[in-house]
Image (cartoon, rainbow, N blue to C red; front, side, top):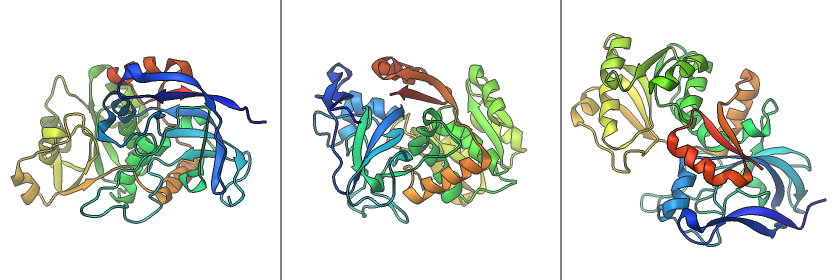
Length: 340
């Protein structure tokens, strides 16, 4: 029996002061939709930016933020074929991207995501198209599974779908947030050697997750550390999570013929690098904006096979969203999850 009312976080304008937890009607699924009772939602730094700045997105108020859910199907539209009642599901961060090339063209960028272009998931129920979900891993709890749609898929897409990572390669991971730690775990799953850069208080934990080498960014220059560890060879693949002028450091640290996956923008949305290493190292730079549904389905299968467990920093209740957003500012070790 589905309740008539549900809790939902909603913005009535831009800014944290415009964010409230209230009661709204439970949505009713249309013919091609499933109604999902949400168990957990993982937060991304992007959620904080959408709430506080809007990020220039076409938000329609009242607007519910958040993108990454795990839940249970409780009702079906009459044309639904991919799911059944009681199926465990996770959401797609970029719902319109099923496989192949990303939507959009040279003039129009496609950034139609949950909790950005489309309404989000920080609520007790959502009713979305069945095409916007995949089956959750059988080996993960809802708290763990909800971390996959953005952070998990981004690392997987960079290293596996686009990066063709295989045993014997070396990977540099910048930081210890959600995408970073998924990168460590996925790279180790595939037999790669992993270097993690970060702060001293988190590097020992990074070793326990699987890092082979660590660089304390407060004591050693990133590039010098990579050159020391690799005996000047450099690394085959870098998850570039900082952005801005930090791309230049990645270009200096990557091996000849290596790949830089450009993912983060913590230091700005304009990136820069000296041109010489880009030209004469034969570097490949690939932009990664999460990934498509088929890749998420493959990630789910890999996690079930490898019995990999995502790294959870802290679990908050739905009423503690603002505290959880403050935690994002402090830099969690892994993912922050809202239990619904």
